[in-house]
Image (cartoon, rainbow, N blue to C red; front, side):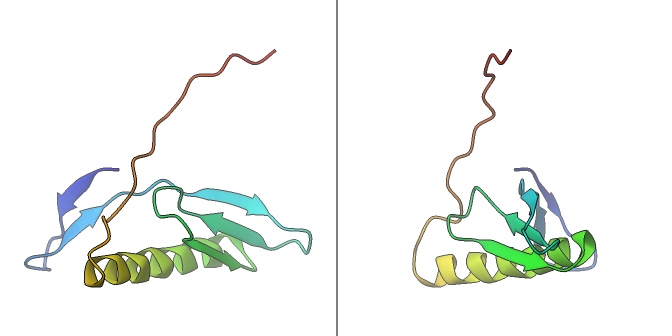
Length: 83
């Protein structure tokens, strides 16, 4: 997760979040944000799913702030040996 000032939006910052994208059984896309538990969205196309998770992340952040919940949980990248 990275962070930068959002040009043209005083007081707002860009924050990067990792997302996962999977195909569902109907051919659509399911997108999750692992650092925000429960933050899941979907779309008929990859592009729609990504736009939808963007909105879901923004909504999750607003809800977390309003309820005093930490903005995000820690996520780590882990090396695992596979054959």
